[in-house]
Amino acid sequence: MDKCVSVVVPCYNEEQALPYFIQEIQQVAAQMATKQVELEILLINDGSRDSTLTLLRQYAKEYQNVRYLSFSRNFGKEAAMYAGMEHARGDYVAIMDADMQDPPALLPQMYDMLQTGDYDSVATRRVSRKGEPPIRSLFARIFYKLMRKISDADLVDGARDYRLMSRPMVDAILSMKEYNRFSKGIFGWVGFRTHWLPYENVERVAGETKWSFWKLFRYSLEGIVAFSTVPLAIASVVGLLVCLVAVAALVVVLVKTLAFGDPVDGWPSMVCIILFLGGIQLLTMGIMGQYLAKTYLETKKRPIYILAEQSEE
Ligand code: UDP
Ligand code: MG
Image 1 (spheres, protein in one colour):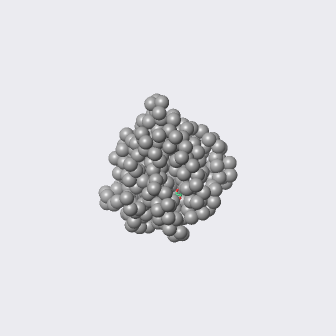
Image 2 (cartoon, rainbow, N blue to C red):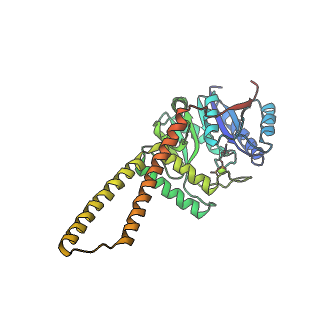
Image 3 (spheres, helix red, strand yellow):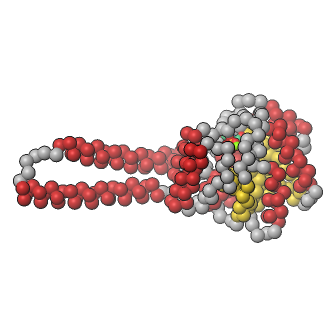
């Protein structure tokens, strides 16, 4: 075999999807073998509470191209992707979901595209969000629009984590050891030439999505804090604007009092103004707190994941 492609697959409670996945990926492996390419399948058990780990042990025994890592608890997909890339031995590394929403059959095509030498990475992008709750799609759209405006991470709407990367790009990603990982941003931030492969959304083959709306919402906030400091700037701009308004109001009040000698009134409006300013101050502190919290976690330099077990070599 000339080249090796590692396929990194984060698995969290995927006992239902994995049997389908392993079938399909082994077919792809056979297809790649005709191109003189070896496939290394690296499954990462992200602290599953079902029988995922048992399945992984079994696959590692059954197929000699399968290896696995197992975390001591659930560290999240980001950590699983990092661990997988760290342990991958291939000249190329692919990241793929276990639920076949990232069609394994696209892999040979992606590999061929890299062979032209024009690109360092081939990434996939969903052109439809069929089968997804409309409210989720709406928020996703808003998020991507916003991120493109306020960060230098170059996010692409509908981008999946499913992509094939060359070794230099993988090493660049591994060199980013931040604890709060937002891969969609990291992929864009490291640069390199990426070809986008559009495809129609595919629904999960089995099992349930691990992302609730709330979890996604928090993840998107994390992405903003990780890749943009614009919210901090907004806080100071709003502060400045409020100051200007206050000065203008002061002048109005002064002139009015001197000209008409107004008696004291306007208590209700005063209360409103105090509440308004108090709100803005708390909001600003909250934004600063978000950044401070991230900084705090980063300074601890905690490991991104902890292994409990891995396949024998
Ligand atoms: N996943 C993981 N850890 C988690 C959540 C998800 O490793 O904490 C894996 C999951 O097993 C799957 C992939 O990440 O292979 C994508 O998850 P899912 O299909 O639930 O997300 P969706 O496709 O709905 O965005
Ligand atoms: Mg999925």
